[in-house]
Amino acid sequence: MSEENWIEVGSIDSIEEEDLIRFDHQDKTFCVYKLTDGFYATDGICTHEAVHLEDGLVMDDEIECPMHQGIFNIKSGEALSPPACEDLKTYPVKVDNDKIFIKID
Amino acid sequence: MKNNIIILGGGQAGIYAAREIRQNDSESNIKILGEENLLPYERPPLSKDFLLDKKNEEDLYFHSSEVLKNENIEFENILINKVDFENKKLFAKNDDVYSYDSLLISTGSENKKLSLDDNLKNDVYYLRNLEEAKKIKEIVSNKNKITIIGGGFIGLEIASSLCQLQKKVTVIEIGNQLMGRIIPKQIADLVQNAHIEHGNEIILNKQIEKITKKNGIYEILLNDNSLIETNFIIAGIGSTPSVKLFENTNLKLDNGIVTNQFCETSIKDVYAAGDVSNFYHPLYERNMRLESYQHAQNHGICAGKNIAGVKTEYSSIPWMWSDQFNLNLQLTGICDDYDEIIERGNDINNGLIYFFLKKNKIRGACGVGIIGKVGRDIRITSKLTEKDTIVDKQILSDQNLKLNKLIQK
Ligand SMILES: Cc1cc2nc3c(=O)[nH]c(=O)nc-3n(C[C@H](O)[C@H](O)[C@H](O)COP(=O)(O)OP(=O)(O)OC[C@H]3O[C@@H](n4cnc5c(N)ncnc54)[C@H](O)[C@@H]3O)c2cc1C
Ligand code: FES
Image 1 (cartoon, chains in turn cyan, red):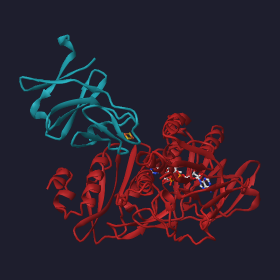
Image 2 (cartoon, chains in turn green, brown; image 1 turned 30 degrees about the vertical axis):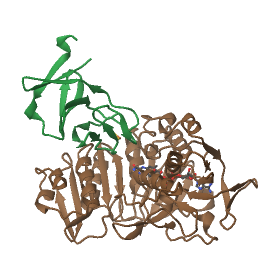
Image 3 (cartoon, chains in turn green, purple; image 1 turned 90 degrees about the vertical axis):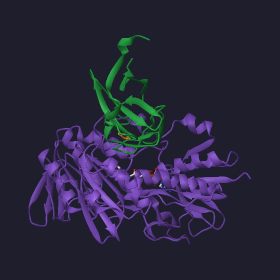
Image 4 (tube, protein in one colour; image 1 turned 180 degrees about the vertical axis):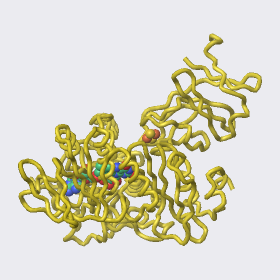
C-alpha cells in the first residue's frame, strides 16, 4: 500500500456523529461520514443524477440523496432505494493522530 | 396455495406490486397486463432528462426482462376493455379472457384534454407516456415558438426543458399563480421568476377563447383579446384517474378507486394502487389520491404484501418533487389542512420551506431551492409528521438550527 494514496481530510472533530462533510480533492469530490462505529467515505455525487450528497440525510448507516430520496448504504455503497439503482463507490478510511485520511485509487 | 394473480396496468405501482408478491409467494402465477408495449418505466424523466437527451429509453426501465423472467413474472402487452368482477374475468378486445383469483388495478391516470374543434384535435399534444415524449421531442426539434397550456408541474417541467433547448416558450395559466393553490404563492412566484429569468414567458389569469391554424402557425386568442402566435402547442391541464373501464360495475369509485389502508377495494380480492386509487390514510384519517413516484412505488409494494397475505397498513407520508431549471421543489404530507404556517429561510440559494401545522404538529411542508438545498429538511419533516411530534417552532423557523435536533428528541 503506497503512502501517497492516503489523503488527509481533516481532524476527527470536523465531523459530528451521524453526519458528513464534503471533501474535494483534485477534480473529484467525496463525502466523509462519522457513524457510531467510525469513519467512512464514498463518492460525493449521487449515482442517479448529478447532485452532491453533502446535503443528504445520514440515518444510521445510510445516506439519503436530497434530490429524489435515493438511499445508499454508506459502508458498502449499495443502492438501497430507487430511483437510485447504481451503487455508490466507497473508499477506505483511517485515523492517524486524530486526523482522518481516505485512500483514493 | 397457487393462485392466479393479475395486475392490470403495467406501470410503476404494478411492477413494484408484482415483485413484492413474488418475494412473499413463490408459487402463484403473476401476470402483468399492460396497454403500452413496453416494460414498466419511470415517467418523471419524460418531461425532464428524456426531453433534454440526458437520459434515453434504456435508462427509464425499472427492471430488465431478465429480472422479470428470473422472478417468474409474466408481462403481456394487451388492452383490457371489459371486466366481470362477479366471475373474476377480464376481457381484451380480441376476445381473450383472463381469469384471476386476485386482481390489482394499477391503471394510473390519464391527461385531461382540452375541448377543441375537431380539425384541431390532433394538433395539441399531451405528455403521459414514452411514445408521446418521443413525438414531442421529434417535433420540437424543428419548431421554435412553443406554447404550453397549463402552468402545473408537468407543463412547467416541459417549459423548463424546452427553454434549455433554446426554444421560445410561453406558458398560459388560467389561475392567478403557477402550480395550483396547493403550493404557497411565495414559492410559486419564485419558480415563476426562475422561468422568466431564463427567458420563458408566463401568462397568468388568462383563458383561451379560440385556437386557429393558418399555414402551419397557430393563433391562440385569449380572453383579454391578446393573440399568441406559436408553432407548437402542448397542454398539461391536469389528469384524472383511469377508471372508465369500471364505470358500469359495482366497484366503488369516487375520484379514483376507493380503497382502505390495506389497498382493498369495495370488491373482495380486488385491490388498487398508485395514481388510480383514492386511499384511506390512517394518519390523516381521510381518503386521498396522489400522483407521485414515491407513492406509486410504496403503494404498489404495500398492495403486493396484502395480495400475498401479509396484512400491511399503508401509512407512508406523501412526498413528491419537481425539477425545473436548477431548482428542486418538494412537497411532503398535506398542505391544505392547517391552523398555522411557519417559514424557514427566505432565499432560493439556501432553500426555503413552508411548514403547515395543525395543533402544533406538522401536517405537511413545501420547499424550493437550488438543487439539493431542501431535500434533507423535507425528509426530516416527513419523519416528524409520521411520528406525530409536537415541534419546537423556534427550531423550525431558524435555518441556522438543524432540524434533526427535533427528531432525536
Ligand atoms: C411526464 C410526467 C412527469 C412526472 N414527474 C414526476 C415527478 O417529477 N415527481 C413525482 O413524484 N412524480 C412524477 N410523475 C408522476 C408519476 O410518474 C406517477 O405518479 C406514477 O407513474 C404513477 O404510477 P402508476 O403505476 O399508478 O401509473 P402509471 O405509471 O401511469 O401506469 C399505469 C399503466 O396502466 C396502463 N393501463 C391503463 N389502463 C389499462 C387497460 N385498460 N389495460 C391495460 N393497461 C392499462 C397504462 O397504459 C400505464 O402503462 C410524473 C408523471 C408524468 C406523466
Ligand atoms: S439525484 Fe439522487 S436520487 Fe436522484
